[in-house]
Image (cartoon, rainbow, N blue to C red; front, side, top):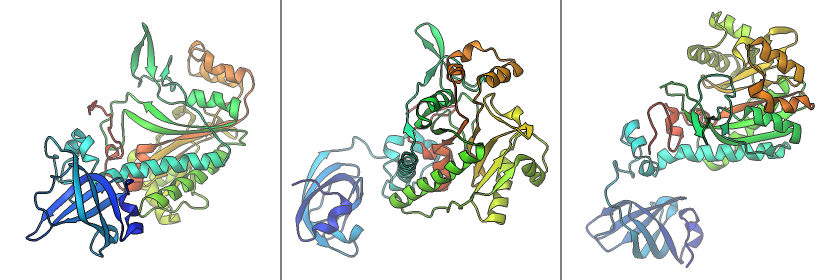
Amino acid sequence: MSRVLSAELPEFVGRRVTVAGWVHRRRTLKSVSFLIVRDRAGLIQIVSPVPGLPVEESVVEVSGLVTASAQAPGGVELTEPRITVLSEPAKAPPFALYRPEAPATLPLLLDHAPVALRHPRLRRALEISAASVAGFRATLDGLGFTEIHTPKLVASATESGANVFPVDYFGRTAYLAQSPQFFKQMMVGVFERVYEVGPVFRAEPHDTARHLAQYTSLDVELGFVRDHRDVMAVLRELLAGMIESVRRSVPMELPQVPAEIPALHFTQAQELTGSDEPDLSPEQERRLSEWARREHGSDFLFVTGYPMVKRPFYTHPDPARPAYSNGFDLLFRGVELVTGGQRLHRYEDYLAALAERGEPVEPYEGYLQAFAYGMPPHGGFAIGLERWTAKLAGLANVRQAAAFPRDLHRLTP
């Protein structure tokens, strides 16, 4: 018989089927034993008159009669079972996977990630992440974007900073890519609208609940924009598509994306927070998010017009206020989730921007080729997948949104 998943069992009441999975829990009473088997779709209850059932995390195949039972997961159970053990665990898990909550500290969970992630509550973050990426791709495909794949070994730092991981590349120094920024801009000259899902690497010595040294970046770039507001409009549609994809896949409470996300200019954000700094601190981001929730009922807030001194050289200035950028951040539930904006698109503007910042042209010659041969006004943004997932799921630490997080201290498992 073909294997049947737990979620499909109600369709087979009165028939014999074969299921397979891991022993999630076993309970032996005086006259009957219960085996709960976990597969990728959920839980299956097996009722057996035989004692001495396989131990937790044994991998089993079970043939039995599907019987209606209101008390069982999904309203059905397997009776008259024939149980075959496919493999047995060499040792017990570090904590009981059948408990509703994982009774373990975060370091213990991360040290034992291969087995800890089997816990239904812990794996939910990865289900949210997968559904978010599916919605990201589907929405952008529907808007005429093309998915691209760019190198993660590069010759120079994207952001012209020191926070990069150098690697030996056949005797030359290369770097793990901080961002696909240069490549996605170049590909606007090919496809006009592009996106990428891929890893990025930041050698920033942060040891906080919101930073990782490697994370998954959801990057978007589009041509023929009027300014950054066209980019923000695409981002709004994308957020709605991602949340709808999660809603279809994971039962949970989700935020509504307003038809128009509220926006503040950076100078207004400074007035609200009483700051004169050229950037926002985490505390100011939290306060602004509270303001957006209070005044607009929105979990999302755009802050536009960041000072040019805090933006990369490829950022397009506001023509009316050149000290400020045609750029934005999107705050979500108290944290900066997205950075984006309009880019420069004229070759001579790039030469001037590099010269103004004292940057040599040579390391950027490959990148600048695209602009030497004509590029449309364009812009884009990037979403950190783990940070998005953590905030959507209400997790305290971004490490809980990654299968095997890499941070200041962790290289294993």
